[in-house]
Length: 531
Image (cartoon, rainbow, N blue to C red):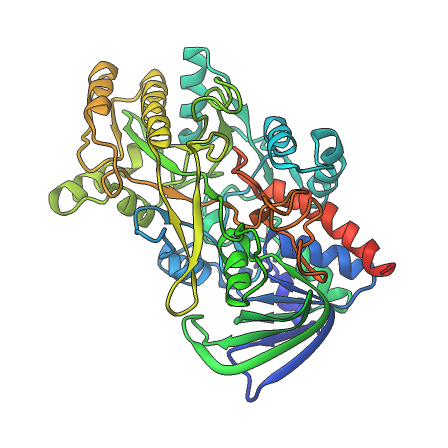
C-alpha cells in the first residue's frame, strides 16, 4: 500500500499556493504577516499566527517537493533540496555548508536530532550579550510545547552499528553518552533522512506546521527569492521577490510584490542577513551579518572487522557531551561527538581521494564507521566566527576564519574520536585530512594527528548549522534585534530563526529554533492584536 502524500492531498482540497516559476505576469500579494523562509522558524511562526486568526503568506526560495518526490537517491536530493545545489561553502571554499532550500527548509533534510538549548549557553547569552527572558526555566514550556507538537522523544530503537560505536567506546573509557531525541512519528528506520522523508515520518515543517497554516487560509509562495525590503523611515512598506526558474538557479523575470502589516525574516543565518543587506536596512552599529557562527565539524573514519553499514538506520541516535563543557563555558573549545550517515556520494566527498585509493575506500564502505565533532564556536574572545557578505550578484556568502583557538579544539577532537573508535573495536582509524592514512593502533594514530598540519583545504571541514548574524540582545550597540526578535530600527520587522543566536549553541539547533520562535511568534501575535 503506497504512503499517502499528505501535501498533495491538501493541494487537491484547495490549499492556496503560488509557483514563482510559472507566473505569466507580475503579481501583488497581500497579507497580515509575510514570513520569508519556511524552515523551523518560519513554519513555526506561520502556524501560530494563522491559528491566531492572521492571514499569513509564507515565502520560500526553493521548490515544493513532497513525499512522492523523495526517492532516497543522493543524486536527486542534494541538487534539488539543498542551498546552492549542495554547493554552499564559506567564501574561501574551505568549509562545506549543508542547508536545506525547499518548502520546509532544513527541517526537510536534517537528521532529526533534537536538543534543547544548553543551560550553559542560555546563561552565557544573558551574562555577556544582554539577552533577557530566555533562561532554561523560562524556555522550558516552549520547548515542551514544540516537543509535543513535533513528536520529539528519545529514540527507543537500538542504535545502528554506526551510532553504537560511540556508546561502546564511551562505556569502555568511562565517558558520558546519551540517547538523542528525534522529531519523528512512525519512523521506518530507513536511514535516508537527509534526502527527504518518503514516509512522512519525519515531523518536518512540510507535514506539520505548513499544512496547518494552509488549512487556516494561509498562503504559500515558492520558487520566489525575497530580493529586498522596501524601507521608508522606520517601516517596511513592501517586499520585492523574484520568481525563480524551476531549478531555482536563475530569476524567471517575474516580480512578486508583497504588502503586509508585519514582516518576519526566517531565512537562516546567511540568507536573513543577506536580505537585510540587499535592502540597505539601517545598521548604525555595524552588527548586521557579524558574529555569524558555524558548528565547524571535523571527521574521523574507522574500519571495523564486522559490517557497520552506516547508510542504514536512524542517522543519529547516540551522542557524547563529555568534552563539551570540561573547561567551562569560556575555556578551551568544547565539542559534541556524533556520527554522520555515510551514503556513497557523501562518503566519496568526505574521503576526497582519487584513483586506486578512492576505489579502496569505497570498497570497504560497509565496514566503515565515521564520527564527527561539532565545535562550540563563539564563547571565547579568540572564537570570533565569521561575517555575511554580498557577492557581486547580491547573493550572500559567509566569510569564516579559523583562529589557532579553533584549530586547537579540532586537534583535541581528532584525538578524542580516535580514542573512542579504537576502544569500540576499530581495526584502523584515519582522521579526515589530506595527509592522513589508516593507522592500526592508538599510539601511532596520536603521533599521526600531532604531525598533521591542520589548515584549510587539507583538513576536511563541514557544517550543517549556521547561527548568528542578526544577534538578539537588549543593547542595540551589540545586537540587531531585541530579545523578542524585534528589529531595533525597523518597527514592523522581526527575525525568527537561528540568526538570532549570539553564539553557536553547542547542539544541533533545530529544537532551539522551534522553542525560541514559538515564544516569539506568540508574543508577536499578541502585539499585532493590540497595536
